[in-house]
Image (tube, rainbow, N blue to C red; front, side, top):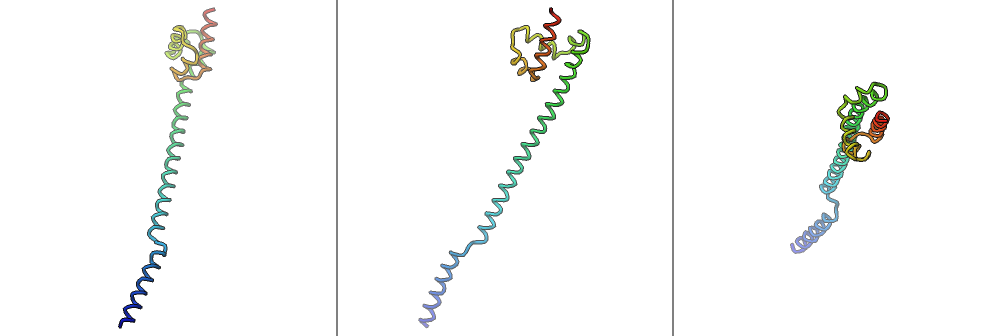
Length: 127
């Protein structure tokens, strides 16, 4: 009887030791789920960044086209159409108040080349 008790105790201690050494399947699954969730978050972040860039490009291109249309009419049209645009008038007012071309472009969010073109056109008219 004592031999049976000692052998069962040794067997139970051995199995307990083996159970600590054996890799836990739940931990492996938890690591896999964690890795998948991190990958999903990274992909979502990258997708959101791409979407924001596309929105900015679409907004910029549409506002640029809207602002570019009056500029193209300025080059080929009479002086009346130049003065009718509020953006153009605003550029002229800011230029005459002493602001630089870069400051005007930043404030109005239009390309520097467009501001220079408008200012050069006004200078030619004044001469």
